[in-house]
Image (cartoon, rainbow, N blue to C red):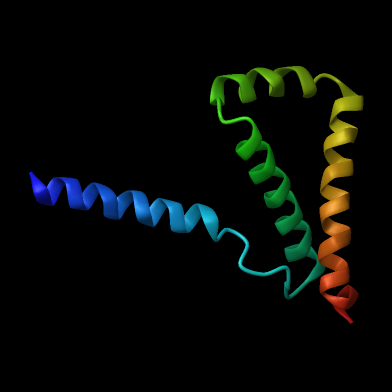
Length: 92
């Protein structure tokens, strides 16, 4: 029983480490990697704020049909990308 409990803690600890360290740095090799990081950052932010998967999927059904909501999502990614670009000295 103790080994099951301890292994459960180890798995939870591994998950926490992976979740907490999805972005070890803003430095990326290319602008494309920076853009992908920006998208990941926005996705993780939404996932942190809205933890209920059913609600997240329900909202997706709404915003996939609403161009203005899609544009807002693009604006969030653009804001994160701008920060990453500065951190990377615009890849110069």
